[in-house]
Length: 189
Image 1 (cartoon, one colour):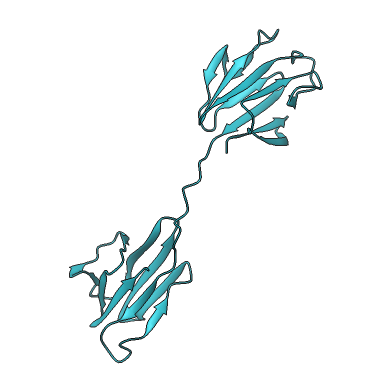
Image 2 (image 1 turned 90 degrees about the vertical axis):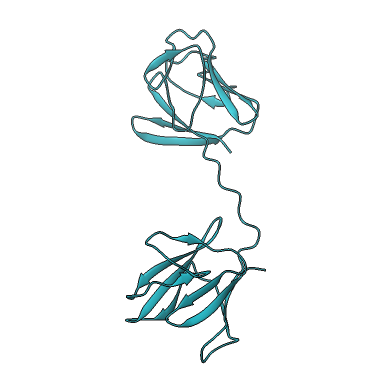
């Protein structure tokens, strides 16, 4: 949800989520965002929201509305734009959080070796697998899924028969990992 952060002399006064189609800014008490300063007009500016876009519009104010240091009449706001009205600085932010993955449950199922058949649930943000000093890989839970990275060891682990490089590689259900001679399968129901 887009929001504006209002500050005066470097001190944040309030954060206002933009939930309405029209948010008014001005000195008069009936505005949605009241800016109590004589340099601010009674009805100074308005933030118009349509869909995911927010436009800043100056309402023919006496001292003008500035965006990123430039006087504006009507302008589309972009993430982290700064609006100056009188002595007030208003930072616009429209960070859209990535959609969460619905299923972040996964396990590593040991296919070969002494512990074949055992499952290791991937519940931590980072799960390390392997033997320290010989071969270690890390499986990291990210907002959009799991990735595997080679951590230590002369022979990097392989994923579906291909040796891992230095970059993290995304894991998919059914992927086969081999590390220090042990085969394991990534399972994400």
